[in-house]
Image (cartoon, rainbow, N blue to C red; front, side, top):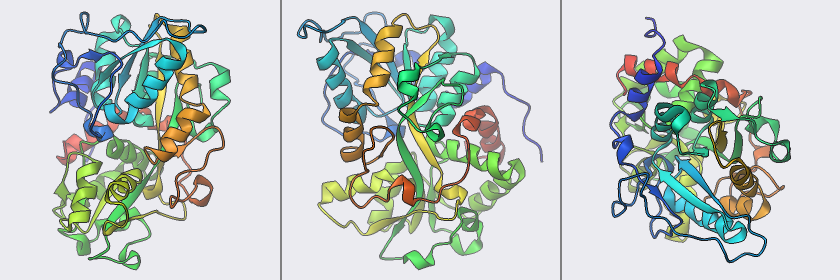
Length: 378
């Protein structure tokens, strides 16, 4: 079986945005605070805001800092508002630069930028995975990030060409219900979950950006034939389908599903809210298995940006100690700069035996979407 021919840009846009709210209906928001925590992949917008991009209401945060350079920067964020906005507010307070944000999921935001092209009002794309960042770089929409920022992050977590940079890391894991499974029940390789013994026991989110980036990594390391076979075999096991990581973790905690494929940090948020054990644990893959991919949330400064200085300042700010500590202690991700350790009980990056892969090679989102469509998962 062969993949469909390479999709055109507009076909990619339609595929990426399928099932999502209309791109034109996603408002740009000024600096604001929120009261709920959104899943990265299920980011929402404030329905009380006007849908007009040009006339969107904003909050002026400049004028209170003698050293501020002022101005504004527009961010298209595939990260959830409640996760990102607090650190963006800190940036505005310290620099006097207003941050205007358009929230959606990573695929929606990448698709919007591709459709807008040189007319995009966005200065920065903040994506939840290297695949979305690489897709924009592949289309010539990203400009080189200054060396002063690139030098802060290990080569594993930035574009080989300096066109995007990771601000925080996330490990792929299997969340499992400890009332139904022990760690010893879990296979050492994610490929072994395609076994019939896992029928009706798995949860996954094929439309989720992080899952799609992982499928791209599987294609890069094992090849398209192996990736297709694994997807078809797991699909035949009747897994429960979810929209994102949060509902999978919630389902494992509730005993609805014994095991599911997720990013590592969601579990720790549930534990924080519960004040302790929730009846579920993460399994971190070992021995370089592709199931243990370390992906990034990261930033690309867009080529058409009219606010390059402000954009470069925001990128560098998100790599400084204050922001990196925020990612470690508030979102439970891996800090990638500043020598900061992850939160307690999360294994350090140097403890994980991760697959050997260049994240820049995850740029072929088109091929992954075509494969997922062919298998009937999106």
